[in-house]
Length: 165
Image (tube, rainbow, N blue to C red):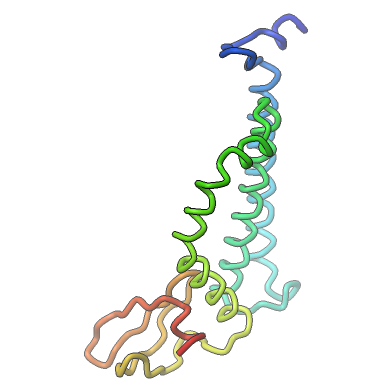
């Protein structure tokens, strides 16, 4: 049995992927998937326990948890299959700086969406004046929100506009 678990699926230079590593990665992915299924059930079914009555807020809470769980899971899977995350991050520092500058606006929208959803300052059904247009809030998501204007058009608005303007 140990001979099967230590069997090298492939190797490149000094790196060798074994059956044990592959099974560990698959098991880690499965446990993360199972954890997220359980979290989704708990978050969506227990509004009284979490004291969050709005369905959109519960969904956003689940999305945030999902992002965190998958990020940690990918890091763990990389470590299990023998790819050291610290080496990868150090090697890609310049690339990550560029990516960070590129996603600044998206990150600002997501953070604004989190504040909107959890503070409850703007709720579905509110009437807002934005960019000279009066609109009714139809949906609040993590990055954007949808407003229905008086002429029946749907505006997709980045969430940072509600915070900064």
